[in-house]
Structure formats: structure tokens, C-alpha cells
Length: 445
Image (cartoon, rainbow, N blue to C red):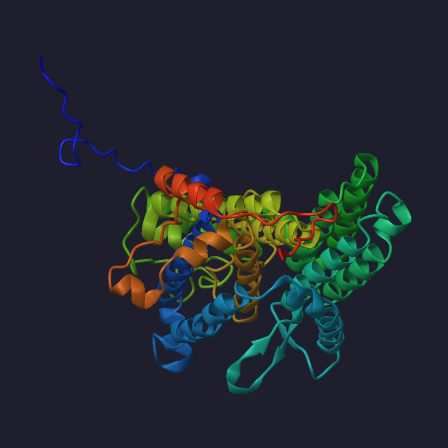
């Protein structure tokens, strides 16, 4: 008769741990958003160095001056983004009203003669010391997002009434839009309109009212474009830029040449021909996407489009998984704003949309636009840390020094069957005090 020996630890096979899919992990939104932001910042810094080198040399005598300035903005903006990612929601809600009032004051100040600086037909900048410029319209976009989200979150029980739904959101938004249009800055006005539409869409505005609002915004934009000679010239050149390739359609045509000459893999980093003097205007700002297509080819432009698609997906995912109304409204509005700007910029470069002069987020050169965008992404990162299971996953991760020492993620302590049996026996062996009807222990005498 043979006896069976129990399997030992050496003979038993241990199954490999099951890896959770990326999108099912608690920190998926956080890592996707942060990763896309870092990649776009690095790509943008490299392309700004490349696209602005000749212009920088012609103006300052150094090919690195514009790129160094962009790197300075990133050096200030990236730590600010990470600090904001650790801030609680109450800080953002408390800053909403002061930011709105401050941005309105700056929007009025930029229109005062002698205060605002006019560039390319728009008085949108306030000169600052050391050669920097402040663009109040960029701050106004973020302020309107926070104020509108806080307002609608406070009134969420009253939003079935159209009066509470539209007032005071539409009058204040109309004031911001009017001040932006007086500069005039059509691209920023479209981005502000996207913020308004996103806020009202999330709170469930009736489709009929929603359609009327979109129609009114479209009619106002069309009327403004027809009344502005500068905007009208852009619309005419958009229909056929080659008809006036030496004047009104010059920038669009040079952008087409840059994209078409890049091919699949591009000319090579730094080998652009359209950035030379007399070539593509605003190559490091509005038309940096064209330089990407020329130097990195179709593959480079597709990578940029993919990164923006993942970034927008992360923002929508954060908004969908949020339980706080303010977080949901803010996340969706920021995502709509960044997505609108990216579509407007890349659509203008490729000839699908009229030129609006709006920069490509995180990629184009710019101080105010870059800093405000990084602040908005920092808020999205803060919201991503509030997703189900995200806070516990962040607490379980070792710190920077721990990761350098090779420490792994601390697994949660689990009770085995033996420990549960031992605990139950210990509890059963303890004498229990008799209780009365009031569940109070009676002392033994």
C-alpha cells in the first residue's frame, strides 16, 4: 500500500501574478495625461529651438534665444503643474471668483491706449519687464472655466429652471467674449465659446436650447468676420490661398509647401527650408505643426495627433469617472478648450479651417498660453488623483528614494484562513460579560 505525501513548497508551482490591463488600473488617467503632457512639452521645445533658430539669430545674434525663453517658461510651468496636482478641490473653487475679476480687469486694461501692445493686428498683450508679455485672454479662459463650473455646481438642484441655467453664466461669458473680440482675437473667442458650450452640455441643457445657443454663437462669429477686414481677408484666402499666394494667402501656401516637402519621414531635424528668412511666417508659433511635418514627416505629424487624442481621452475619462459636479464640469470644459485649440491650429495648417492665429497647446512658443495650459493640466492631474482607487494606489507607491533603492509597491495585508481561524478561537475562548437590554455590560460581584 502506497502512501501519498503532501506537496511541499518546492514541488508546488506558483502562478505568475495576473497583470491588470492599463486602462483598468486606478492611475491610468493620471499616467496617460502626465505622459502625453511631458512628451508634447519635449517635442515642442525641440521644434521651437529648430523653427526659431534663424529668426533668433537675426534679432538677437544667438540661435538659442527663443528656445531658451521657451525652456524658461517650461521650467516655471512644470513645477507649478505638479504643485497644482496636489491641491484639493476647495483651493480651485476659492480661486474662481478672484481669477475672474482679475482677468476681466486685465481684459479692460489691454484695450487702454498705451497699455496694450498690438501685434499682427490684435491688441492682446501687456508688455512686462525683461521682454516678457502677458496675454490676459489666456488667463480669462481658465478663469471662466473655474467660475462657470463652480457656479453650476452650486446651483445643480436649480438647473431644471432655464433662468438659473443661463443666468448669470451667459451674461458674464458674453462680457468676456465681447472684450476678447474688441482686441480682436477670433481664435481665443472660439476657444471661449467652446468652454461655454462644454459647461452647458455637461449640465444637460435641452437640445433645443443648446441648438439655439450654438446658432447664436455661429451667427455672431460670422457677423464679426464679415465686419472685420482682417478676418474677411483670411476667409477669402481660405477659399483659394493660391489665388493670392504672394499676399493674403502667403502663410497658408508656405505651410502647404512645408508639409508636402516632408514626405513620410521628413527632411531631418533642423533641416527645414521654409523657416529661412522670407519663408514661413510665425514658424515657431502658429505654424510649428508645419515645421514638424517638414522635418519629421507624416510620421511626426501623426505622432502629434495621437498624443493629443490620448490627452483628450484622458480628460474625458477623468470627467466621466468624477463624482463631484465641480470636478466633472471643470475637467470636461478644460478638455473641450484644449481640444478646440488643437483642432483649430492643425486644421488651419492643413487648410481644413481658416487661419485664426491660435497656438498649438504645449507645442507652440508662448509664455502666457503655455503657463495657463500647464496650470489647467495640473488641475486635471489633481482630479485624476481622486478617481476610485487612485488615492490608495498613490499611497502604496514608494517614494523617489524608495524606488532608487529598489523597493516595490507595498501590497495590502491579507488575512489567511489560519489567522482567521485562530482569531475566531481566541474570541470564542474569551469570557463575555452578560448584557442587559440596554447593551451595557453588568459588573460581576
